[in-house]
Length: 389
Image 1 (tube, helix red, strand yellow):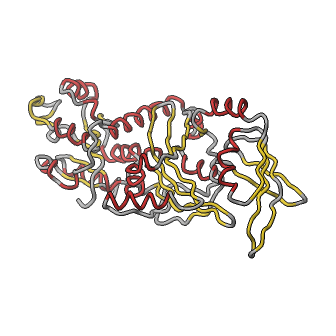
Image 2 (spheres, helix red, strand yellow):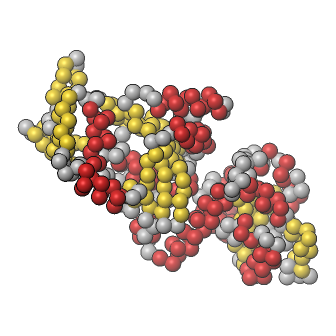
């Protein structure tokens, strides 16, 4: 075992508890329920893959007060390999961060065959599990991570009920995005996203492991000139995922680039990262390492996401922006325009841009604001485009 564990898949008979449920019964005083609870308080989630009768096993686990601590339980008489693979897919985690524990060597080998990078161990690992540094986790006294996986469980069940393709399900999910610009007030979460995300971290520009140094590094990022930066808050009809993304977007005359762009795997499969990239105007981005979602996939419509509380925002625009807004001046007005565009139906921007040491007057932009849309106008044959975010 070489990588910190984020999910444990438990066998039940002679592993989680002493005895075999269908052959003589079990000793309900000998089980690892308290270990499962402590792991949950460390942000490490537990699942089950057991050959047993589902209702009988569930009854015992409920009687022990431990059933609610498991996610994606797979309890039936089918072979374990494919079921292990299904749990890994449902959890949306990399296999090396998952441990399967079983007293049967054949089951362990079958699991490794089906999921090659999966960590496996027999029951002898369990007595010293909590002292093992790979199970240190991160303090999560409110068991937020477990709650997130419970939401994912409900979503998986709803997906089966709704049927259709994955896009149909996403359109039924009411996914919304809210950008929180108070990064300094939530700076530790920004640090965590920068350093702990991998699968949806496109830039992988890490900060220091020393928390005070890391905080200052984030402050330096967000206080730079022409920076648009925020934490990304995602909700859907199943639950609130909290701050699951962070970006640092620099934009000005002649440059438009993402210096930081990372998301938690909590929203994997929602395509929030793709939708937001388009809202930001498809800026330049240098992708480092492997990621599992393609920002440049134009075949994916990602049309199931909207800004949070959009109806209220629309009402505000209609009441506050009827008179229109006209901005004239240098290119620095683009930063002001970002905040004014969403509150008026009529918007005009006349801005200068520096080119080869001289000022170039841009064509005027005449805009009826629709948040999240792109409008293009022409003046004197010169196209001018403004993307709203």
